[in-house]
Image (cartoon, one colour):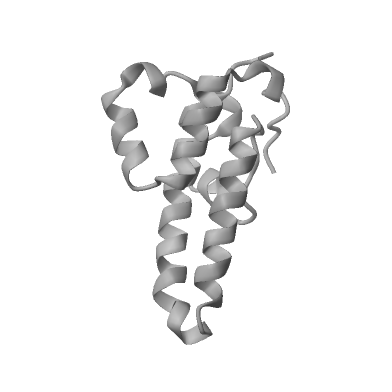
Length: 120
């Protein structure tokens, strides 16, 4: 597990928290919009959550496709997870989604420690 402690909720401004929340709630549109707004992408906090939310979208899509086999329980779990992750991002937390974030780091998709500002 990566050390995400250098980035504390106190060092995140309200605009960054809002964008991180939007990354999870509007996962399809928000990262695309973010690339149009280059100044937002410069924030390591927003960049971290944008990548993690995009990966969560891929997992959520599989869960929703498999949902009819589980009588909708996977869709319910996906919705609850999305809301929970959006809330944690809005409170200024840098968190890892179990298994998913570890896979992203091990495959070199991103390194949270390098993306977060030192001592922030």
